[in-house]
Length: 88
Image 1: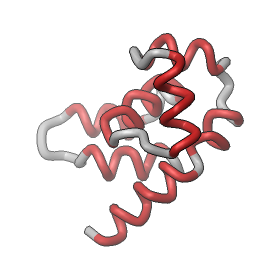
Image 2 (image 1 turned 90 degrees about the vertical axis):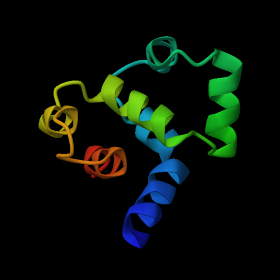
Image 3 (image 1 turned 30 degrees about the horizontal axis):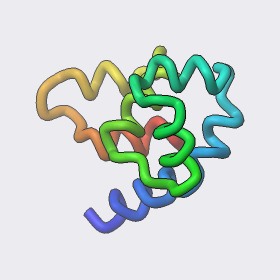
Image 4 (image 1 turned 90 degrees about the horizontal axis):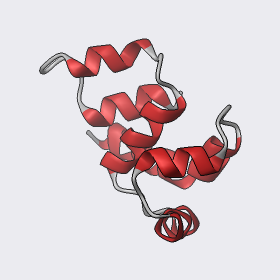
């Protein structure tokens, strides 16, 4: 569990770089995330996205990731594991 939390912190702290390297424009990601633009930029600046918000962002920037389908099956993979796998 400690490893998962450390990986979540790592992802949260590097989300701006992850988004910068995404093939999608930031405006598109913000729109699809359902988070208002001011809130999104505040959360990015403060590095305060909730795990569910990071999951939604991961679903947007990597929609074809094979691990996503594993997560959709009950008890196959936790949200935290999914986020970690998506950001590797």
